[in-house]
Structures are given as C-alpha cells and as structure tokens.
Length: 174
Image (cartoon, rainbow, N blue to C red; front, side, top):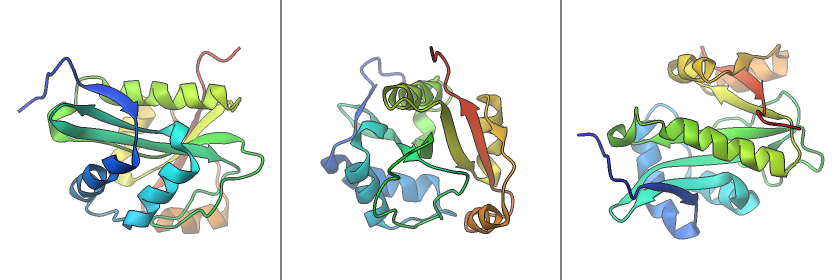
C-alpha cells in the first residue's frame, strides 16, 4: 500500500519521535543495527540535522545528519561524543523511509533538508557512507566515490564489504 496523505511532512525531530524511529530503523536496516543511544546522541548533538517524515498516523521516515570533518566516517553503531570543532562537510548518517512512502520524492526532499542545514553551517559538501544495497540510490542522487585511506577502508568494513564513502557539493551555494 502506498501512502499518499497530503498532510505528510518533513519536520524537525523531537526526542519523543525516537520511540517510533528506533523500531523503524530496525525494520528497514536489519543488517545495520545501531543501539538506541546512537539515535539519542545524534539528535542531541545536531538537532538541526534531524528530521522525521510524519503525519497524524505516525512517523514514516527519518533523516539523521550532522557536521563532520575529514574522510573518515563514523563507524557503524559508534557514539561520536562530540562534533568536530572545525567541520568540513555535512554528513548524512541515515535516511530511512517506510515502504509505504517510497517512490514519492521524499528522499530527495530529505536531501534538500540536509543541503539547507549544510548551507546554514557554511559547509560546501554533503558526505555519507553508502552501504552496498544503497550505493546505486546515492549515485543517482549525484554523490560520487571519494578516494579513501586504509583507515577509512576499515571503517567501511564495519558496514559491509561493498560500503563506500561518497560526497557531492551542496547545490545552490553562492
């Protein structure tokens, strides 16, 4: 069943949304489990980069993103403890949509939210770790592979053997 409710919107994530986001993440990403504290910490550290796709019936997706520095991704299921003092990019930690809202342009809307956050933070690049199954989607969104270090190869292996570090310039920058 496709969800076509016109009232469904992206809105800032709130702490009480975590009760819906955490099981949604477990359902959508069973091969990439993360502890509840990961979600809580990302929201606490970078609320301006965290959004939910919701309507009166509940949460149908989420975006978790934050400032980041360098070409070394956070490991899967690893707390950050703090954000970098001098970020260089806006990192998309996770974008997940329930099956019922896929194919409606909602992911592109979420990427625009991340770009807006990056522009507000004066960061010129979006970056992310693409898992093997999601790589094709991210390449279609204009992200390209980065040259990576041996240390980054080890981080990517914490996701899966086909994971890659991708980035793209923030569009609409002056």
